[in-house]
Image (cartoon, rainbow, N blue to C red):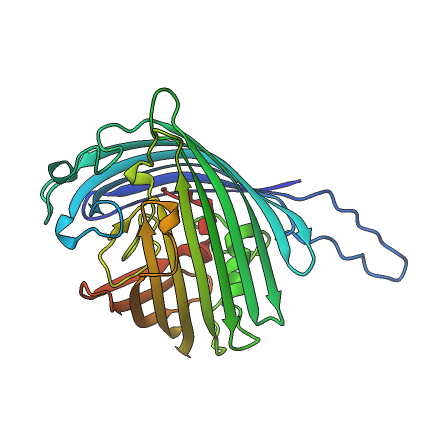
Amino acid sequence: NWRLSWNADAVGSNNGSWRAGVYMKGIYVPTRKIVTQTGRHPANTQPVGLENPVFHLYAQTISLNKIDYFGLGPATLPSGRSFYGMRETIPGINVWWPIFRSFGEVSIFGELNGRLVSIRGSQGQPSPSIEQLYTEATAPGLTSQPGFIQHGEGIRYKSTFLNLLHLNYFVTFQQFIAPGDSQFSFRRFTTDLSHQMSIYSKTRTSKMRTQLHDSYNGPDDCSKSLDEHTCPSITRDREGSFGVRLFISESTAPSGHVVPFYFQPTLGGSDINANSSLSSFQDYRFRAPNVLLLRGSFEHSIWGALGFAFMVDEGKVALTRGDIGFSHLSHSFSTGLTLRAGGFPQMSIMFSWGGKEGTHTIANVNTSLLGGSARPSLY
């Protein structure tokens, strides 16, 4: 009744940062009854896939030696840049459980993680170490980092209309609990609404990414299914799509509590999970407990695996929930080339401008085609 897969990996960088983890994925497959009749083929059986509960069990440690910190809120300046290092160990489990499948799929999500964080200075960098510019008042959690128990619940709706419009809505509510006398417990509510319009009915990228990401694969596997262990081949069909995404994350803390700076989401360049936003700015440029990001995107194949992409980002951060809105947004434009290689990671190199703080070029490998859902978020 169970299909189990294991993955383990480790990676390092030239500045001494590293990540290592072990990941297990389990898919529950109910006992299936096969009925045969004389002169007929066996009845179709239930396929293993999106309608089955999926469990992830993992233990991961990451150590990063060079993370930017500019302070909190939307009014920070580039001159306030500092650097810090962080180690975080996350043992945990999560589950996706489909509950409804008609005119789309509705699934519920649950997670339970331990989060052990250690913050350190980062010396020998182009800007000062964080403790030289900031204090506990301007960087909550700088001097002490308690262990956290973090659990969360969510619901997701996915649907495809006419094989052209793909919807992926995900709403989560997370609780970060710091036992003892710590003043860092808080709650986070996140809404992520993604829309993708395929230009051609044969476009398969969105559907493939969704299936592999949720059901079949661990973080180092690109198999087509549990029973077919080959990676999807490169397609020469014309593929292209338009996308619109709205992402809002808001945090609340009990009276006398604050959200640690290292668990606050960021906008600018790439965040700690390697997700891009307002890419013309420096990495981690804006940081606060509350963020809003609105993205419009276009991507199209040029020849074979080579593609072209264009994106427009509008976003802001806020120290209070009441300041989140669609006014006074920072913006960024990005364009570049993509490498669309079937089940292998989608690679891109994007040039970004428009943020009034210069330009930024980012090369990125998108791991979503390889079942990246098995890795826990770092914040």
